[in-house]
Amino acid sequence: MKKLYNIELFRFIFSILIAYGHMMLFYLLPVNKDIFSWCNMVQTWDATLTIVDCFFLMTGFFMFNTITNKKDVTTLEFAKGKIIRLWPVYFFSFVVFFVLSKFKVCSFNLYDDVLNLLFLQCSGHKLSLGDSGYSWYISSLFWVSIFYFYILRNFSQKSTRLTIALITFFSYILLIHKFNGGVGAHISPPILDLFTPGILRALGGIGLGYFVGEIFNSVKNIDYKDLKIAKRVFISTLEIILTMFLLYNYVIKRVYNNALLYILVFALLLLLLALQLGKYSQVLNWKGFEYIGRYSYSIYIMHQPVFLTLKKYLWTKDYVTANPIESVLIGLFSCLIVGILTYHLIEQPGRKLLKYVLK
Image 1 (spheres, one colour):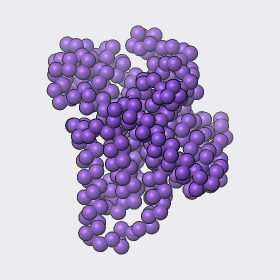
Image 2 (tube, helix red, strand yellow):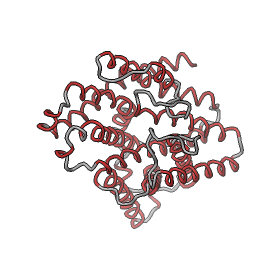
Image 3 (cartoon, rainbow, N blue to C red):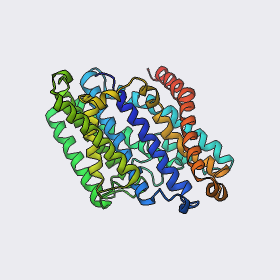
Image 4 (cartoon, one colour):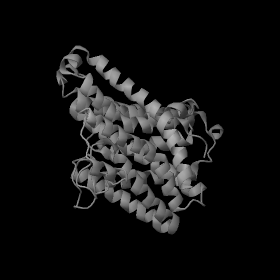
């Protein structure tokens, strides 16, 4: 598969949007919601929740590529790869929360947070999420991607397709009906006393992303040069419309009370970005976007301790009221800087070390 730098760009944008949503919901709006007239609390909450599902789709899409093009990779090797990819920053955040707790910036429960390091945060095996609540996504992604990889690697393609399709279908049914058109928060109790919303969201999103990968594989040989100009224009226009629709609903106003609509829209956009049959997706496939996309994971994991620190030492009611725009910009800029530093100082060296240890 050719490099998909345009998807790396969306990884980065989505990580920033999630950080922005959490910052507004839990740190700035509670201080003085009247001065942030542009930010609707309900809209921001809904958008922040749904954006995470886009990451699950991307995981499923790239998992299909691994299954298809790396047939010698075993489930154990796949699991090791996930640990190498996820654990260094995950562990670093654990250390950061411990240090910050000594300065009364946040709480720290040793037993809860140690279990989180085993990716059990949102698996249903714990009664509390611990202190690093935003990293619930990592737990769900880890176990569900391994589960799907195992059945895809060890059972016939026909049976696994049907199994994944049914799991995806019913996961979203349970979520949409339980949460009245939403997908549920990571703090919500298990559905049917068994499945946490995070696990169901991962089952649905990674499953749907896998099928996006299958569709891509079946039509990837279409050549842009063979398309008539009208088709090229149509595809480019569709790519732009889908992007604007998602950003409008994520940032400005949600137009329909069913999260599945936005998940399906992104699934189609993901396919078009991968195919690159429109000028829009081709222009966005600039190699430079690889350099910002690689910071998305560190930004996502580290934005909570960044905001907790700002809340403790900067975001007082007087400061936020007097400097609302500056408060937002400082929060986002701090996330970006900490994410970049974490990537270079922790994520990259940590991966190399774990790769050596687990080889």
